[in-house]
Structures are given as structure tokens and as C-alpha cells.
Length: 390
Ligand code: BGC
Image: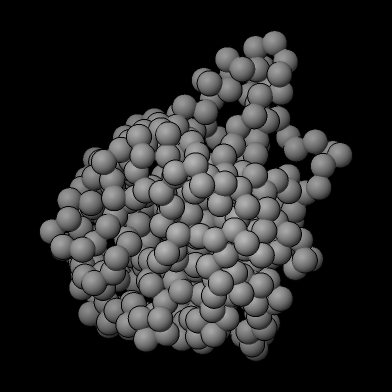
């Protein structure tokens, strides 16, 4: 038995735009419907979790999980600059209460990629006022998160800085992404700090941001090691270093990326790949956790995402088992880890790739919205109940 620390949180994660449906007032919805878009299909009703979150949470809790990570949709809460929807505040407050009712510790992300369309039109993260707009939104959201233990300010700022021009890459963690816009990176850091300052006014809230750790590997060719160092720093490491002093650092790990002398290279043909085209590589989690612990100088780590897009649920179980074994080894070495949130609770809208890459522990019929838990949910629930891997 590989036992995890007492009080370790076992959960699953979602993001508002990927599951709620009909987020018609954010930048992604507009991009989904733009002429000539490369986004394969629009999000539409998504999984209708805006209405069905109670059922989603009940399924997770019934399986044995103890946490649920979800995000707020800024465009619903502040549909026009400075106009706050009381009803939407109440909606998300009910989600927090529902999680508690089911014994799920709610982990709330304030921002998971999408912004209100008005914020996008005002320059997005290049707007000099972006940090203060986000701080104001954080204040608006305080009644929702007032008694939440873990609040994520910004999901994957390192990916957000790569998509800051409004690009819609199909591949969020691999070869083919644009280079990060360093000015946007600074703006995201300023927004994170301003948001954390607001959150610090509420005793008990622990806050941090989450980083997509990309487990860069050198191909070993001449020049590849130098290229790796040059490439990894502005992609991942800078975001981990800048989490020093935060209450936690979120690690989101899926696969690895090889770097050759000219930069990242596509996934080799002879390796197992997932429905997102990424290499099947469970050790990515342990590598991400170790990097986060070292580069933050020992900020507690929270695995806020880890998972696999596959139509074969037995590969999901195998992947997760492998990832958790690596995580356990990191914990054995003294790394403080708060919990593990599997990506994702539900099959959902995988951004530019549409609904085809299925990351969920629960399948969803897109016409009836009927939820069907997969064996992997029962498996993870058993691990959670035992707080141990067999
Ligand atoms: C994001 C999720 C996304 C997942 C799989 C992460 O980069 O936070 O929104 O669905 O990876 O691509």
C-alpha cells in the first residue's frame, strides 16, 4: 500500500467555459463563432453543468472523492464593466455550498482562460488596467469564496501568455504553441499579485496560481541542452519562481515535450499517444511536482490538474495509477502536497479541439445530458477512500 498524507484531498476539476454551456458573453464564444475560425466546433450547451452542477458533484462525492475544483465565469458575474450580477454571485455561492453539503472541499479558480468580451475588446492582458480590473473582479467574487480554503487566481498563466493575442491553439501543452508574450506575462503576474492581496483580506483563504508544467526533455543533440534551458525558463520556470511566498503552487501535468537544437519537436511516431496527440507519459506529474517544489523554494504543491484524453478508460486508470505512484515518491522525499484534482470530472469542451478529446471520469450524452460514470471514477474513488494506492 502506498499511503498518502492525512487530510490529502482527492478531487476532480472542471472549468466554467468547458462545462457550463452558453457562456455567450466571453471572448471564446466570440472566437468560436468568428468567420474562418480554426476552432473545430462551438461550445454550445457544453455539458449544461451550469444547471446540472449538483448532479456532477453528487457523482464525485458518491464515488468517494473529497474535493471539487471549478471556476467562476467572469463574463456572467460582470457582464458589463462595473455591472455586477447579484444572481450570478448567488449561483456560484450555491455551488460552494453544494460542494460542502456533499463533503467536497471546493477549490475555486477565479479565472480559467476566458474573460468577458468587453475585457478582451479593451486590450485583454495588454490593457494597462488589466491587473486592476482583475483585482476588482476578485473583490466582487469575495462573497463566493469567503470561506473557501483554496482559491486559484489565474489558471495556467504560462499558457495564457502564449495565447495572449487571442490565438486559439488546439494543443495546450505541447509542440506548436506560440512563444509567450513577456509583457503579458508581467501583466498576469501583476494581476495575480493584486488578486492575492484582495484575497489576503479574508482570513483562512489560501491562494496561488497554477502552472502547466511541461516536463521538457532534451533530445541530446548538440545544442539541445542549451536550447532547453533557454526555452523552459520563460515557458514554465519563471512562473514557478514567481510563486515563491504564495500559499500554494498548482501543478498541472499531462505529458512531456522534447526540445532539440531548434526548439520543441513533434511527438515521435513510435510512442503511444492520447486523443490530444500527446505522448502517454505518466511520470510528467512527478517531474512537475519536483520542479515546482524546487523552483518555488518549497511552497506547498497542489496537483490541480492531471489526466488523459482517451476513449479507452482502462488507459485512464493505468495513466493515473502511474502518475500517482510518481506523486507518492515525491511525497516520500519530503515534498508537501495538499491534494490531487483529476482533469477532468466530465468529458467536456476541449477548447479549439471541440468535444472529441474525452478527459472525463464521467461520460456525458450531449443531447440528453445524461451522466454515466466510467470505471475510472470508481477506481479513483476507491483510492480516495483508502487514501492509498493498492
Ligand atoms: C487546461 C484545461 C485543458 C487541459 C487539457 C489544461 O491546459 O487548464 O482547460 O482542458 O489542460 O488540455
